[in-house]
Structure formats: C-alpha cells, structure tokens
Length: 197
Ligand SMILES: Cc1cc2nc3c(=O)[nH]c(=O)nc-3n(C[C@H](O)[C@H](O)[C@H](O)COP(=O)(O)O)c2cc1C
View 1 (tube, rainbow, N blue to C red):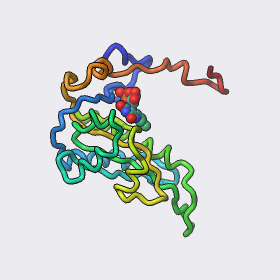
View 2: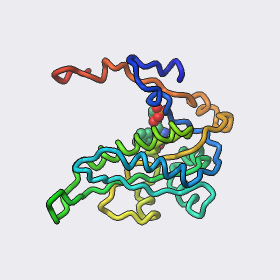
View 3: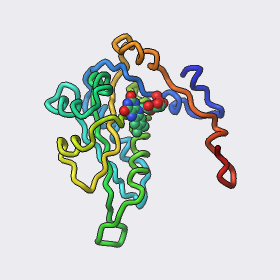
View 4: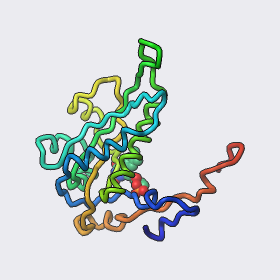
C-alpha cells in the first residue's frame, strides 16, 4: 500500500493492494494457479445466475501467444507481451430464463462480466500475482482470430503476470508504474437522491 491508497474507512487490505502494473517478468504460470483465478471469477453473482462470462486465454510461450499479443494495440503490446497469460473476457448476450425454453436478451451481461473480472483480479492479487485490464485491442480482429460468435460481446483483455522491474518500461511509463489514487468517497455516494456535480 502507498500513500496514494489510504482508505477513508476500514476495509480489507485486499481492495487497495490490487493494482495494475505494466512491468511483468514473463515467467510461466502453472495451470492450477491460472485456473484458480478463473475459479474465483466463476463464483461472481449474475442476473438469474446466468453466468454470462467466458474466458479465452493464452499462456506466454505457447502456440497461442502471438495470436493474442497480435490483437493488442502497439502501446499495450509493448508491455503486455511480458505477461504470463492473456485473457479475452467475453459475455453472452442472451440467456434462457428459468422456466422458459426460448432465449431472451441478457440485459446485465456486461455488469455481470465486470463482477467476474473483479473477482479474478482480487484472487490473483491475493495469490501474489497482478492483473491489468486492457481495452486497447482490436475487437473485430479478436472475434475472428478466436472464433467468437456474434451473440457474445468482447468486454476486455486481461494481462496476468508477476511484477517485473519497472526499468524495462519506457521512461514515461516508469513514472506511472505505481498504485493510483481514487476520488474521495464523498464524490461517489449520495443519500436519498442524485447529488453529483
Ligand atoms: C476496462 C478497462 C480497460 C483498460 N484499458 C487499459 C489499456 O488499454 N491500457 C492500459 O495500460 N491500461 C488499461 N486499463 C487499466 C486502468 O487504466 C487502471 O485499471 C486504472 O487506471 C486504475 O488503476 P489500478 O487498476 O492500478 O487500480 C484498463 C482498465 C479497465 C478496467
């Protein structure tokens, strides 16, 4: 924890200990470890317990790796190629409601997938690993390259790795290689009615 991450109220340290570095070691991640992160995500809550999240992953050093890093923007590929695993998190946009046989639109698939991502990130952090979500990747290219059907939305890429030495990053990114602060809680909550700037 750093000075930029002093909570205003007493919370479990896991929430402020998680942060998103860009310097990774590229070391191998074993299946049991990686799958434990997906396991944590599996237990996230979702509307109707529909569990719309799906995770497509590649581990560094495998035949899949370059196909995954090739989806990232140049900026993100620069650092994320040293991750141990890359994940594309997608969510299913339809589900079959309880007692029905026909699929309906899943109105909260993105919200639910976000909950799963948070669980994955927190479990990784608890296990001594780091995650870094990535929006800067080519979703159209990823859909084709990974064979993702039309009824799934691509939500984010996620880099997973062990923290590396920040000297491997370009100078500008070295300065940013630290936990970030948050808005004051008072800007985020309102009792009774909307009261935000
Ligand atoms: C959906 C999403 C997309 C993001 N996209 C990128 C990205 O393309 N490149 C990047 O370097 N960081 C990306 N980030 C990381 C955020 O900038 C980072 O999570 C945020 O600044 C908060 O910092 P923290 O995760 O260290 O607490 C993304 C995060 C999320 C949740």
